[in-house]
Length: 415
Image 1 (spheres, one colour):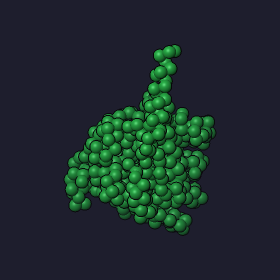
Image 2 (tube, helix red, strand yellow):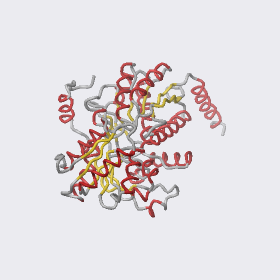
Image 3 (cartoon, rainbow, N blue to C red):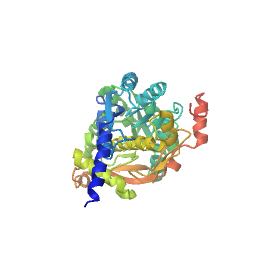
Image 4 (cartoon, helix red, strand yellow):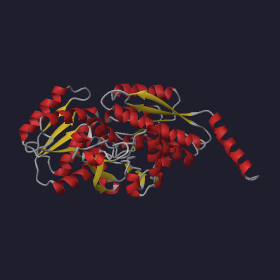
């Protein structure tokens, strides 16, 4: 007991000193309003949980972390202005997303301000492809990674079917559609037609018109390259028109909050992809992931989504890199991140040096029947994992990445 008391006093003293030191600001650029606001809320929750845990353990290099956030409203020009505001506050790094156009624009401005930018939900190939640069890191998967795992499942279980694509008209939608067309051999637009809808702010009439064309096409697979509330609106109209009972609906990127908003009755049987679900830590045997789920459940009385997990992971990955680098300097942290392999909320992941893509396992999922969903304590057991692909198999190769960069007249190494 006599030995324990001095050690406890020392520990408390260290924590007290850390909390008394000047806080380090992390800047979250996320959608608090707009079509993707639910994904934004999940990011905020994940980030706050990570910061509180890190501060409880003494902070980073003896300094506590604090979160400063700005609403991007999923609009690039607003997100760029937010970067300047957060940089002027003294933010040490920036993160956020839920729109690839936002992440790309904000990331470029962050580079100009000498700050690393971590994309949370930014699935466009362009984020780490033709628009990639040294100061941009993407934690989530790319559109091509989603397309490969979902395409493999569709090709096996629904071969030789006709597709119809309804796509959000911006960089994420464009690259997601093109990637899935390639993966499913549906590039022939005459046989597998598609329609683009405005983003942001498409009116319901746009979705109804697009779905009317889908119904007339006699397609077997309806691909909705839509996200957040945009997907929910389209699904409600598709259900009213009877399409969800006639066509297999596929959504390149699903999240817990999207299914939550639409409801399990409406979303039952929908196919999509996720880089993480709250069931993954159990499946992959990740004790750290299980602890995250439990802590999130208790704090927010809801299961964490992939959006929350991404923000949580980014905060921990940045903090860990700062400790390895023993510096908050962007260049030093960047060097500590490249090629770094780790296990946090699932199996092994790593930051690929040539494009700063996080390479990780990606899952094809199907929304479970309502009866199964309701057995869960929060009635959120939405996803059955139907196929998985390792990050190395899913991610584009260096040669593919360089071909994309050269086609866009970009340098073949990050600048």
